[in-house]
Image 1 (cartoon, rainbow, N blue to C red):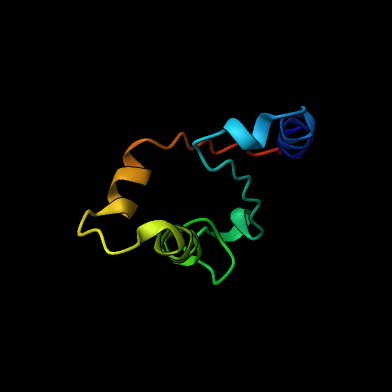
Image 2 (cartoon, rainbow, N blue to C red; image 1 turned 60 degrees about the horizontal axis):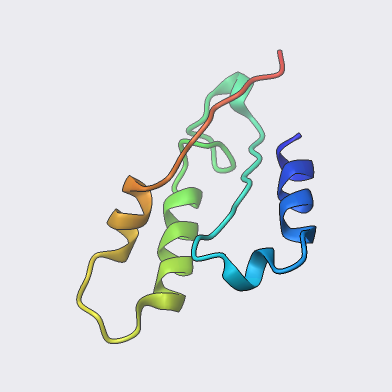
Length: 81
Protein backbone atom coordinates (compact mmCIF):
# COMPACT_ATOMS: atom_id res chain seq x y z
CA UNK A 1 0.00 0.00 0.00
CA UNK A 2 2.83 2.43 0.76
CA UNK A 3 4.42 1.97 -2.65
CA UNK A 4 1.03 2.31 -4.33
CA UNK A 5 0.40 5.54 -2.44
CA UNK A 6 3.78 6.94 -3.45
CA UNK A 7 3.18 6.01 -7.09
CA UNK A 8 -0.28 7.58 -7.04
CA UNK A 9 1.06 10.77 -5.47
CA UNK A 10 3.95 11.15 -7.90
CA UNK A 11 1.68 10.39 -10.86
CA UNK A 12 -0.44 13.48 -10.22
CA UNK A 13 0.32 16.21 -12.72
CA UNK A 14 2.53 18.88 -11.18
CA UNK A 15 2.97 17.02 -7.89
CA UNK A 16 6.74 16.78 -8.10
CA UNK A 17 7.35 20.22 -9.56
CA UNK A 18 5.67 21.94 -6.60
CA UNK A 19 6.79 19.49 -3.91
CA UNK A 20 9.35 20.79 -1.42
CA UNK A 21 9.68 17.47 0.40
CA UNK A 22 11.28 14.12 -0.33
CA UNK A 23 8.83 11.23 -0.38
CA UNK A 24 10.36 7.87 0.43
CA UNK A 25 9.16 4.35 1.12
CA UNK A 26 11.64 1.97 2.75
CA UNK A 27 10.97 -1.76 2.95
CA UNK A 28 13.11 -4.03 5.11
CA UNK A 29 13.72 -7.73 5.46
CA UNK A 30 14.75 -9.75 8.54
CA UNK A 31 12.44 -7.97 10.97
CA UNK A 32 11.29 -11.33 12.33
CA UNK A 33 14.81 -12.16 13.54
CA UNK A 34 15.89 -8.68 14.56
CA UNK A 35 16.03 -5.34 12.89
CA UNK A 36 19.74 -4.96 13.62
CA UNK A 37 20.74 -7.33 10.83
CA UNK A 38 22.59 -5.90 7.83
CA UNK A 39 19.30 -5.34 5.98
CA UNK A 40 17.03 -4.56 8.93
CA UNK A 41 15.45 -1.23 9.84
CA UNK A 42 17.77 -0.89 12.83
CA UNK A 43 20.86 -1.12 10.67
CA UNK A 44 22.67 1.98 9.45
CA UNK A 45 21.10 1.83 6.02
CA UNK A 46 18.42 4.49 6.67
CA UNK A 47 20.82 6.92 8.34
CA UNK A 48 23.17 6.45 5.39
CA UNK A 49 20.33 7.07 2.92
CA UNK A 50 19.22 10.24 4.73
CA UNK A 51 22.81 11.50 4.85
CA UNK A 52 23.31 10.88 1.12
CA UNK A 53 20.01 12.46 0.10
CA UNK A 54 20.67 15.51 2.27
CA UNK A 55 24.22 15.91 1.00
CA UNK A 56 22.81 16.21 -2.53
CA UNK A 57 20.89 19.31 -1.37
CA UNK A 58 23.41 20.68 1.14
CA UNK A 59 25.37 23.15 -0.96
CA UNK A 60 27.72 25.38 1.03
CA UNK A 61 25.36 25.83 3.96
CA UNK A 62 26.53 24.94 7.46
CA UNK A 63 23.07 23.80 8.56
CA UNK A 64 22.57 20.27 9.91
CA UNK A 65 20.11 19.24 7.20
CA UNK A 66 20.03 15.52 8.14
CA UNK A 67 18.92 16.34 11.70
CA UNK A 68 16.27 18.74 10.41
CA UNK A 69 15.06 16.14 7.89
CA UNK A 70 14.80 13.46 10.58
CA UNK A 71 12.90 15.75 12.94
CA UNK A 72 10.35 16.49 10.20
CA UNK A 73 9.97 12.85 9.15
CA UNK A 74 7.11 10.48 9.75
CA UNK A 75 8.23 6.91 10.33
CA UNK A 76 5.84 3.98 10.55
CA UNK A 77 6.84 0.45 11.50
CA UNK A 78 4.28 -2.05 10.28
CA UNK A 79 4.54 -5.82 10.49
CA UNK A 80 2.29 -7.94 8.33
CA UNK A 81 2.49 -10.97 10.63
